[in-house]
Length: 151
Figure 1 (cartoon, one colour):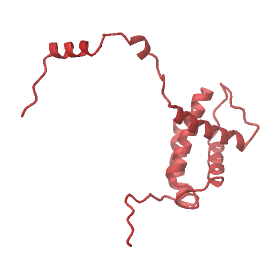
Figure 2 (figure 1 turned 30 degrees about the vertical axis):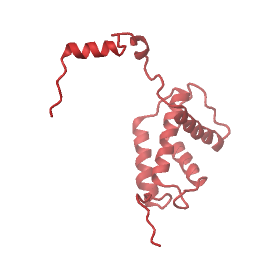
Figure 3 (figure 1 turned 90 degrees about the vertical axis):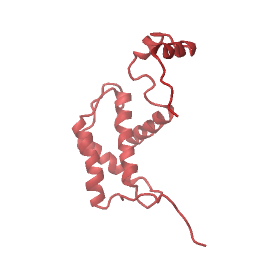
Figure 4 (figure 1 turned 45 degrees about the vertical axis):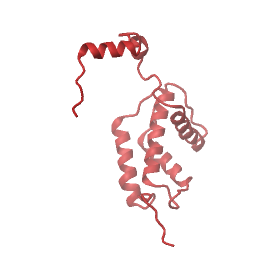
């Protein structure tokens, strides 16, 4: 059976009955990046930044600090890898390291208000996926989708 096509007048009446008022939320909706990150996401970003501070206690994370150079970022990611243990293997997985790098970049940008060069972030992601995997520093394993055991 075909669905009845609703007319524009019926749609407007339905929206009004459900409390819709044109432009009522315009001021709030025009604010960019409001509630961009959930509390859980912000907490994960803070963990990455805390690890960044712990790597070298002399690092100061205040607004306006320049973003670290590519060599510093790679060294920090190696520090993360060497200080972590994986769940599926002894070393962290590619996906875990990529997620950590993403949290670091976004958290740094959120707190410091300094953006990274997009070419640098792309280079870091490529370096994690290709070079670190090829060198055996991290592993590219996937969790099995279905685990069935014979008894």
